Structures are given as structure tokens and as C-alpha cells.
Image (cartoon, rainbow, N blue to C red):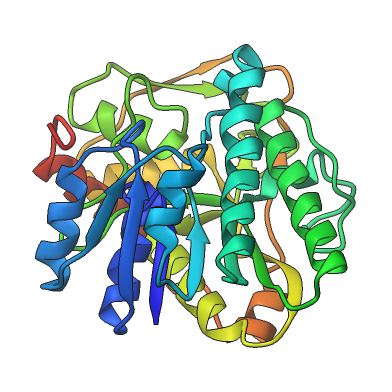
Length: 333
């Protein structure tokens, strides 16, 4: 089977490409390197010993998509913008790239009669929790433009399936992807200041930044800091392989991909200190507006439908992230 991977040079996309190649899929990677680099593709090929067909293009360019999609049997769609804070500052850009870009992709898929799609969504579509852990039946509501773009896309795909039930669509709602490939060749390399906790901790540990800001220590949790569901990026990548292998009949199904475990900010800092062999400096600062105490998944449906569950624990996440950071102190540069 030949698979088009949009955004395949990105953090999650690159790890998924490795796992797809490992089980024998042929790949076409479509990316414009807005948040990645061509070096990633070389490293994917080095890890797997297999070649990738690459097409440079923007997800809003239907002609470029058509060139990439021709001859493919399925699509895994990662391409998009993903920073919550930036989405508040640039909402129109997020709607343009994420929503309009997906519309362009699906139109081309329809034109070329490719009806198999795995979509990269986010647990942010749940918004503030009514109950925990989050199941797929939790009400959907959002608190920022990034999350809203994901929800709009989900609704568009559900509407598409209602109108044409030959489509096979899997919507994967991620929790907090962290870690790196065990080789240390690929991992998370954010441009500018990291938006997420783990890469920020890694940059403090390697000496690139002074200390980690812990936003609040008075939440009703075991140590007062916020609790989140972290999932190793390789486990997440394997979830995409399972999704692709599973959607062999018409459907439009949303599934959580998370560990089902909650780790606090201090849990992560202490685990990373253990992994790197030195104390990671941090300071407690006031809470951020909009942050919540706990946010974690119920991954039961993924186990039942995909025969998938997260296997790697927090220590493995930190060890692999540190290995990547040490081998790439300046990222892919």
C-alpha cells in the first residue's frame, strides 16, 4: 500500500513515517518545511534503510496535493499549525492553514477516489473537563483557535461521511506527545521558544535555557502542579499504523491516543533530572489564565478497536528525549 503523509517531516509525522516504513508501506511525504527541515527525511531513511518519495508543497495548493496523492491508497494528515498561544495571536492564519488546507486535501482525495484517511486531531477539542478521564463521549468544546480548527475539521469529516458512506476515516485525538526515537536521530526540535513542557525542560538540562517556569503549585493535585497525560511519540506513531491497518470498512470514528496516566509537572522535571543525571532548575510562578488542574485520557476504545496501547513509561520518554537533545544540542541545524 502506498500512503501519502502530509506534514511527514514534522515531529509526529517523522516518527510515524519510520514505523510505516518498518512494516512495509511505501510513502510519499508532502511538506513545506514551515516547522521542520529536509534533514529529517535523510534521518528517516538512515533509520529505516528505505527511501521516501518527497514532494515540497503547501497543504492549500490543490495542484501540488494532486501530484503527491496520485497513485496513493490512503492519507495520514498531519500538516497544520499547532501552537495554542500563536493561534490566539493569529487566528486567521490557523483557520487558513488548518481548516482550508484540510478542505483542499479532502477535495483532491474525492477527485482521485482516495477514501481512506487518518486525521491528526487533538484532545484540546474536549476543552475544560466535565469528567475525568476523558472518553470519546465527553462533550466537545474548545478554549482557543487552534483547538477550534481541529473541531471544525472533525465536524467537516463527520459531515462528509454522512454524505458519502464509502469514506473510511479515523480521527485520532492526541494527548501530550513527548520523547524521541531511541536512535537519537529524530525528535522534537521546536523553532524559537518551546511551547510544550518537555522540550523546554530538555533545553534547560542542556544549558540552552536557565530554568523551567512552573505555572502554579496550588492546584488540587498531589504536589500542587498541573497533571497531564504524556505519551511517547513512538507509541503515538504506532497508533497511526494500527489505525491505518484497522479502517478497512466505511466509518468515521474518533479515538483517544493517550497513556491513560496523569503525570504532574514536577513528576516530569524529576524524571528528566534522573534521565540526564543532574537537577533541572525550576521556579514556581503564578498560574496561567485558562490552565486546568488535570487533563488525561481513557484509552479503552483504542485498545478495543485498534489493539493498541501505550507501552513506554515516563522514564523512557525522558531518556529518549535527553538522548536526542544531547546528540542534537542545536536541533537539526
